[in-house]
Image (cartoon, rainbow, N blue to C red; front, top):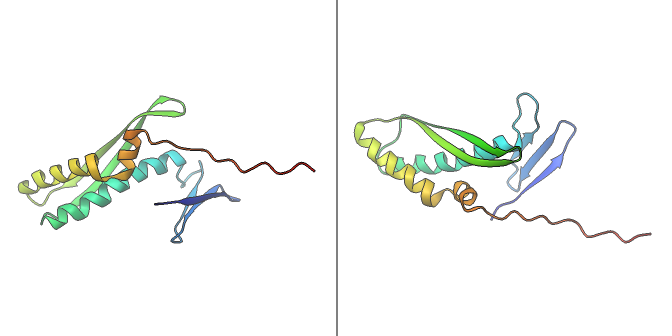
Length: 133
């Protein structure tokens, strides 16, 4: 369904997809860490699904943004991820449509959020051993 390749570079690491997209990762200023990219994926998945669905129902939101935060359970383990919407509605009638769509996206349509919530297995595949000379 999807794949990326991550490689070490002179300046950090770069993730590339098959469509030519690139994201540079590092812990330096102006760059995203892998954890921040995970949070961006959660937020992006939700907002990029909510936007067209609310617009299709005749309620194009004036402003649509999300803040995504994580709480750690341990230094290398997340306890929870919270998506907080920041919206400006065109009318009070739009609130009901937006809330219903956002809930449905969260519960059924956002692959990233749903995968995290389900505890998706992450497998490790190491290269085969090279023959000893």
